[in-house]
Each structure stands twice: as structure tokens, then as C-alpha cells.
Length: 80
Image 1 (cartoon, rainbow, N blue to C red):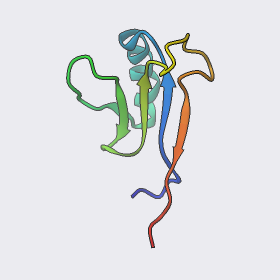
Image 2 (image 1 turned 180 degrees about the vertical axis):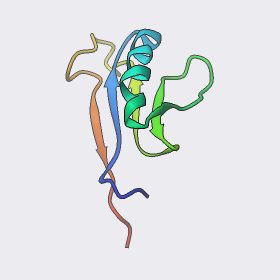
Image 3 (image 1 turned 90 degrees about the horizontal axis):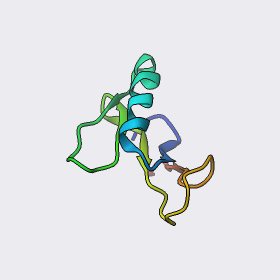
Image 4 (image 1 turned 30 degrees about the vertical axis):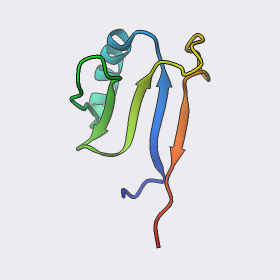
């Protein structure tokens, strides 16, 4: 577990490649890189493969990806 309370953040999109190109450029200066995944899988970003991760997913409800639809923040709790 990392020192962050954030496990991961998910942002909604229907265009994985266009959105991933944007986040490739924006997140690189922050130390994030795209994690290799199988073709067709949603893009994921991490720093050295550790949490917190950023995922790009299609909204579960099938509606338009907006500032709130398709987005969530997952928190983690320290064990012990």
C-alpha cells in the first residue's frame, strides 16, 4: 500500500486513444506513465506501477462521459 489514501481515480471517456494521448502528455511531467495492457483494455496510468492509479473507462450506464459521469475516486484504508 502506498502512503496515499487514494487507491485510484477513474475518468469517463468514449475515445480511449484520443483521451490517452492527452493524458500521456499531461501526466508525463508528473512522473506518471501508461501501464501496458492488452489491446482494447482501458488505459491506466501509474508512477512506477504503484498506487494511486488513473484509469480511463467508458461510463457504466452507457450515457455521455461528462465531468461526473464515468468518474469516481476510490479510497483505501490501512490494514492493522
